[in-house]
Length: 97
Image 1 (cartoon, rainbow, N blue to C red):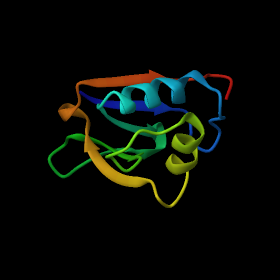
Image 2 (cartoon, one colour; image 1 turned 90 degrees about the vertical axis):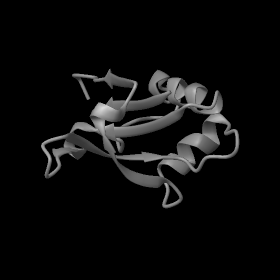
Image 3 (cartoon, one colour; image 1 turned 135 degrees about the horizontal axis):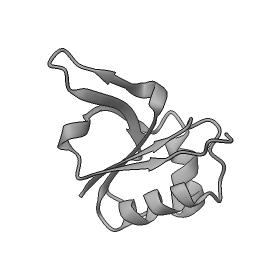
Image 4 (cartoon, rainbow, N blue to C red; image 1 turned 60 degrees about the vertical axis):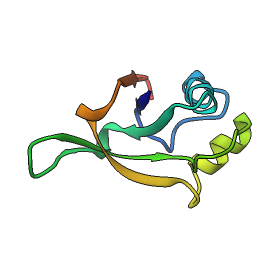
């Protein structure tokens, strides 16, 4: 499954929040998981909605702390994801953030 989680901003997400627990569990179960924010959505030249998103390198299981650290580090993988190609777009908006 290809899953993109849309959050307010990546910089304001805190360890212990459910959003990262959901992302980690899906990733460790073998799904492709990316995280992005509304500010990283755009249209490409063919009018597809594209998200500039980040994920962690595949091929291993992560602990919660390692997942969070890697996702926020220069080791994170940054990709443009065409939203139409996803199986799930999960909106995790916190209006007070």
